[in-house]
Amino acid sequence: QVQLVESGGGLGQAGGSLGLSCAASGRAVSSYAMAWFRQAPGKEREFVAAINWNGRSRNYADSVKGRFTIARDNAKNTVYLQMNSLKPQDTAVYYCAAALVADMPPPSYTYDYWGQGTQVAVSS
Image (cartoon, rainbow, N blue to C red):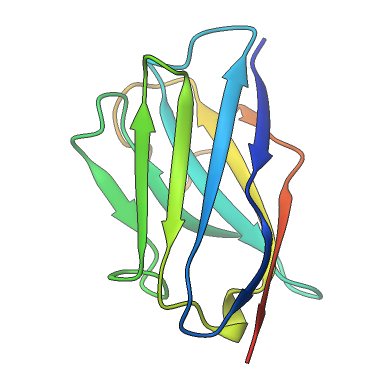
C-alpha cells in the first residue's frame, strides 16, 4: 500500500507562484510514475502533469505547460509541483497520484493510489 499526502496548497495571487509537495509512505515510490491532477468546482478531475520513475520524462497538460514544473526526489519519496504565473482558472483541489508502472503511463491509465488533495485558490 502507498499513502500519499499533499501539502503546500493555499491562496495565491494571479501571476504569483505556489509549490505543492506530495510525500509518499508505506512503500517507496521511487520505481513508479507519479502525477498531479486537479478538480475545479463543478468540473471533472483533470490531468495536470506526470513524471516517470527517474524524472527524465515529464508530461504536462497544455493548460499548464510552460508555467508548472513537476519534479521528484526519490531519496525523500516526494514529488513536487511548482506552479508559476498562476491564473484564477488554476483554482482547484490538487491531487497527487501514483502509478504502478515505471515509465510514463498512457493518458488512459487509471492511477493506483491517490492522495486526499490540497486546495489551491488563485485570486485575480
